[in-house]
Length: 205
Image (cartoon, rainbow, N blue to C red; front, side, top):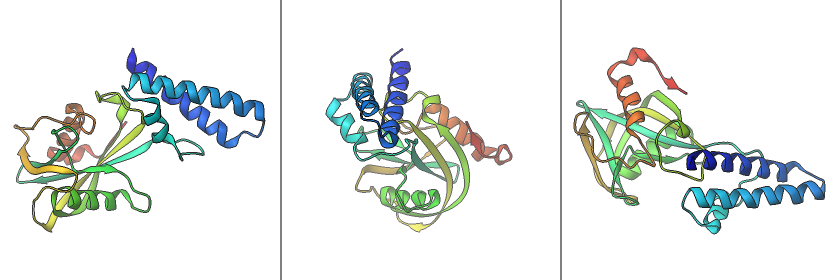
């Protein structure tokens, strides 16, 4: 039930923010502001955040609200996957992060992999586009899509980055404890299936 309420709250927030951007009637503006305020309270409650933090998250994000994009690089070498150890929780994820303005998804995968692991990579193909709500992630104030891109190593040296504690390759049979806000077992299964069976093609929800 908490996840249902969080989903409803995020939809209300999107409606309110879009309405505030387009409305011209002062009475409508007041109503949208009330809806926005209530949505912040709900999001804070069900994502275990504070209202101030939620307001900061959405501050400056106006116009028609769309999902945030998280890009992850899938670096597969000698039957092993590259993982980075996140500073925020001490657990492991595929290198990546929020898409940056001005960068293509492939460019984000290149940049994030080098920053977080020291390796230079070349993107090869899209593996999957997933909706975060379809997987067992912890509650989050964001509605987001996740893009997974297969990459091939072309250089660099493996080391921990500024935002990571470590970077290592793990076999598919010995996956480390996952940073569940970034990658789940169900997502990893979808990705590894496409590594082992390329004929499956890209996955999209």
